[in-house]
Image 1 (tube, one colour):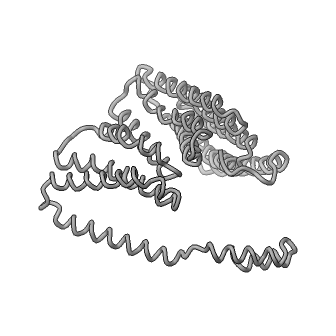
Image 2 (tube, one colour; image 1 turned 135 degrees about the vertical axis):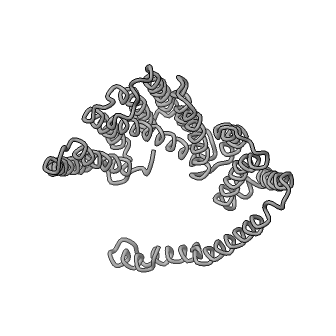
Image 3 (spheres, one colour; image 1 turned 90 degrees about the vertical axis):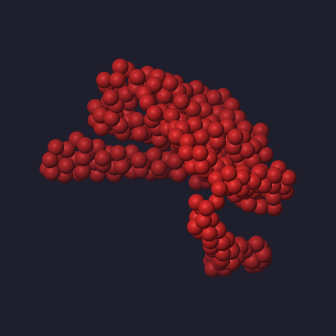
Length: 372
């Protein structure tokens, strides 16, 4: 907090002189020397890059087993440090503990790539990813504290399931690719039971975002005739199964987190699940697919408004506006119709913005929660 702000608040009569002085003293005592920390970070980065360069220059000369042994020793050392000192480190600096857990998991992931390089294996990527998740996801779930570890868990899982699905079209693809959404009810259940509620909250938010992103992508693909209609119904079944998994996940969130925020988060996931099979039905129907997309995001906006998530509400309104612009181009056949389409889209966007402002002013209080 700057001294100028404190002076402005004091001049406006918001705080008295004693409060101003106490705030200034507190900020001075707890100020973070960002420049100094930046210098430390640059120095550490330079050392790390230097070590990498030295190793890379002699990489082929180092026996593969020795490289693997050193790699494994680094992982073992970090795991031992976490086992012995993680709690104490977290009490002093939660971000340091988070960074240590993340680096350990990253070293574990690169170990599988290193192993494949040494022994020239040709296994599909999803197999080492699945092995990494089996070995390191418990560590991340048991010790993670914020975004990095939550993103590592969900990101690794998404990468694994989609690489598996990319290997071929099978009826289980829908179930497999929907598995990351099941992290949402798990995280929702753990939020009130764990000493690390921030981590579980982030994991739930990421799982919800994955469900919404998948449904939005399905609607976009349907608008562009992205689903193969000559596949014997495999895609339709997969979408139906994936949607059912998302509906179950959303219901689980509602069941374990009964407050308004939990109900709205679960409703969004259920809506995303319902949109998946519908996207296959409206494939190659540009207007219908666009309307489905906007209906999905209108539901998200309504849920965000009810749960008082201002940022999510604004995002939903912005996404709907962008989709209207894209739709004007999709429906246009030439420059003239493109122009009229843009004019119509602009008018509709202004209407959406006006309505959003009126609705938010009427129903949304000034002080709102910052997230799901």
